[in-house]
Amino acid sequence: MQLHKEAYKAGSAGQWQQSFIDLTRDWLAEGDNDIDGPCRLRRQASASGAFVKFYPGSSGSSRLVHASRHGWDSAIEFLLDHGAAVNAVDGKDNTALIWAALSGRTRAAVVLLDRGARIESRNSLGNTALHYAARVPSTSSEAITNGRRDLCKLLMSRGAALDAANGAGEDPEAAARARLASFVSEYRVAAAAVAAAAARARLRALTSKYLDEEDLTGEESEEDEEELREEADAALVRLEAQRSVVDLLADVRAAGGWPAYVAAPRAELLKLRAELLELRRGPSAVRAHERPFLDRSIPDDVVAHVLSRAADDIDDVRRRLCHAAFDRPAEFESVMPYDSFVHKSTQPPSGS
Image (cartoon, rainbow, N blue to C red; front, side):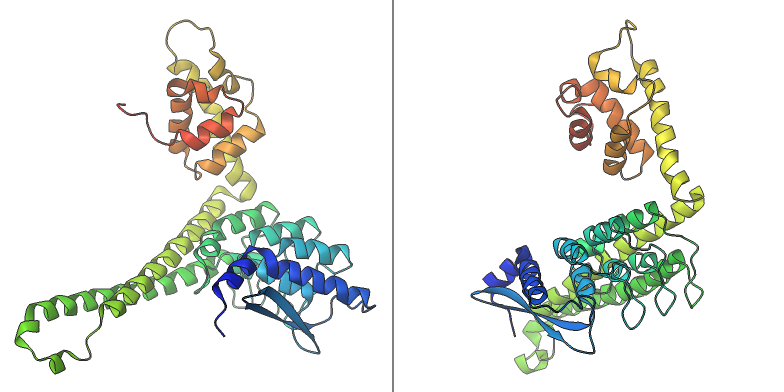
């Protein structure tokens, strides 16, 4: 059944999650304490609003798994506060964390990890949460697709192992590379279909005045061609997101693990502090907007801001810092200097 537009919008904004919490609260008040028991969940929407229904039974997943799959972090907190087991497994040994990773729900993963979820739990296939986080889904929203890199960073920062092999002998990087290969093939097919449709359209335009209408039947309409282009664009988004994940995992492995991967950019930033002194001309007096980088060490929050906005690119960090120090002193000296200049000084000033 097609959802009413307004109801779907309301559900996306949080009504489904709130309905989930309200229904679970009422269910607990009735005295049923099997909060980890299996059930099926159904989301419904109409012109009057969006809501969920539970169907308890011998099959299905726990309420914590349902909340984790949908990324309902408030519902996860509610369930854990009322006794849900954070490391409980379903019939295939999937934990809520594994489901959150599989569904690309970074915020849900943060809540679960903060509440004691085991990072290295494996399901019946031997996959960890990182195995699933590293694989971009074939069909998903662009927000979830492009959030896979951040999800992998989160898991590795909490101790997820890059060398954990599953039942097929694949570690997370190998699984990510296999998915990348499939996306490359998918995009080639989609791009070829777009090119072929465009060629047929050009041929049709050139020959239409020489052909009868019945001879043109079976050719793609403009709507069909647009659909092919949209499919190719979506395939390219998945391919690029997967390639980004593969590059991240390879870089972390090459650095010798997550701690070394994080430490390398920080060490480079510390060198920039000395370079800024050499770049300055004139009196040795330190200007106010330079002081944060001339201290004995750069505060961790500064490093975090810079790294989070610089896409792990040291050359980009260098450019941003120099522009901030020389070309945007007012921003550098503002109430939130680090956040401000990192956000805004991404391009060289005009005329430079």
